Length: 403
Image (cartoon, rainbow, N blue to C red; front, side, top):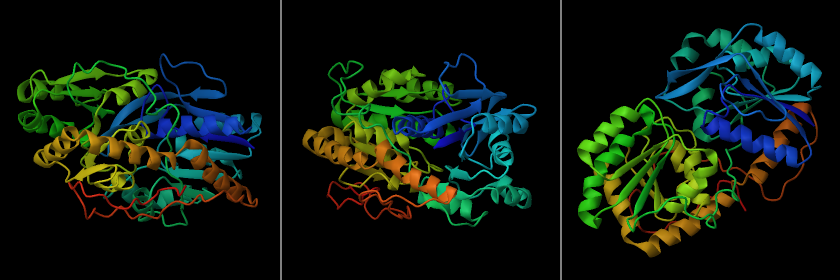
């Protein structure tokens, strides 16, 4: 199969879409398919085989985060020429209704089957509301719409109803593994890791505010914040004021060093307050055998089994966050048990399994017969508020992809 993947977000910009593109394209190539990734231009970006860059890119605040916006002239014409030259059988477009590259990718398809994958979640979208008639016309160019989670499907379907397939994000379970050696020294202190862009919706300030309570209960600890973003300066000032000497800001971290950071941590803290449709960093931490303390928001409920793989706490509540962190860090046996359960849950999201499901979506778009895959099924989990929050009592796991 000759597949084109069009994405406005890709490395060197980190994020869920970039990880999805990298994981899927690598796995498809290993299976013998021809994959061309088409994305925006970027400074100091490494040259990769079968990667085409076009146009320019800027970062734009949206949905409590910072997203990629591609601009340039003649994008549709150039895309159509690439589709023709590469003899693509199918085009897979991420965030297909986002300007400009994704929408131009839709228009350039000109009859080719299109799989459109939606990643975002929110309560509402002003752009979708205002431009719904125009975007509905573009949406109809999609042969098979896909969402990475039920919260993502529910969000986009309120504006553009359709028969969506659910294909989750995946995780590299070899790269992120309990066998990875620690990448930094802990100096004998418990280590809490926060990983990702420092955007407003990530809620890192609440984790910083929780630290005095954790230190009062456990003594000195270290919080490592890996990532950069618009909130970085204010968060550094807050840490100096609220938790002096307890927080290490690493800034942007090379991809090669990320697994070692998970390995060095005693737990991952994900204090986002809203609009997370999945939570790839949670899957990475769980694949590395680390317990997770996260906000009880829709996308994170898809991954964390409260009391078994970690804890979910009310978003924006430093006291509840501190209590959960204390529980995990104070009980090594509990932390080890949660890490092992998280690893097993993450194995169900190995890229090989997720890509097998995606290939069936491709076959559907091409009008081909679907191929049976052994026990691969996505749970239709609504992501409604969890009944169990901070409680060490174990509960039965709800597998995302059954083993």
